[in-house]
Length: 297
Image (cartoon, rainbow, N blue to C red; front, side, top):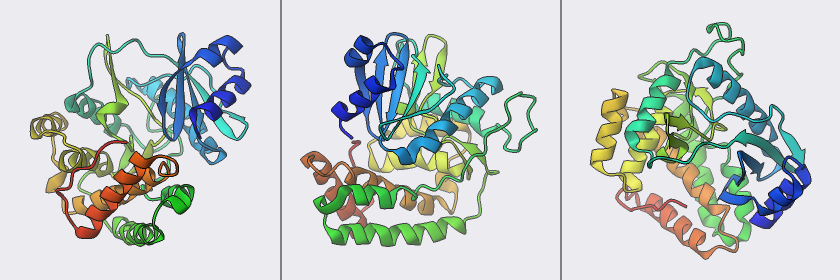
C-alpha cells in the first residue's frame, strides 16, 4: 500500500469532507497509513486481514479510557472496510510539548501492567476485551509473502526456520512477572507527550501475554538501535525491574528480531533502502553478531 492508494481509500470512506480528505497530511506509512485533518486522525490499514485488529483497537481505547489509562481516544466506534482497507477515526492529540523519553514509556507501562485481565475484575462498564496472545511471529509469513522476489529465497527460508524455533521456545517460557494485558509494541515512539503528560498511542498490538514482551522491546532498542545506557537505565528505574535479569530474555529478544527482519522485508520491493536494511539484519542474525547496529525503518 502506497500513499496514493491509502488516500484513495480515505476519500472513499467519506469520514472526512472531500477537500479535507484530499488535503489530509500523511503522518506515517507502515501497517497503517495515518492521516491528520483538523481535529481528527484517520488510520487506513494495509489490507482486509487487519479489520479484526482495527475493531479490537477501538474496544481497547474505550476500555483504557474507562480504566483511567492515558491513551488515544476513538472519534468513532466503528471500523469501516473500504476498498479492502480497514478505516478508523480518532481524536487528534494536542501538539507534543517535548519528545517522549524511555521513562515516560515505563510510567505508562506500569499502568497498563496493573490492569486486570479477567472480565468482571474491574468496575468499568466496558468489560476487558478478549485480548489475543502476543504472537510476535504471526506476521512473518505475510511480510515475507509481500516481499516476494525482492529478497533472497534463502533468507526467507532462514527466517521461517527461526520463526518456528523461537515460537516453540517462547511457548515454553516461565515468566518472572504475572501475565496480563500488554501494549505489545512498547517504544517511546508510541508515547505522545501532550500538555497533560504522556499518552499511549497505537493500541492495535494490545495483547494478553507475558509482561516481559513489553520490556524486551526496550532492551533490544538498547542493544540494536542505539538507545543510550542512560535512557535504558531511566526506563528500568521507573518501571522497577530489568528484564535482562530474566533467563527468558534471549528467547523473546530472538523472536522480536526475527519479526523485525520480516517486517522490513515487506518494504523491499521498490525500496532499495529497505532491502539494504533487511540484508544487514539477516546477515547479523546469521553471523550471531549482536553488536551490529540496526536502523529504524
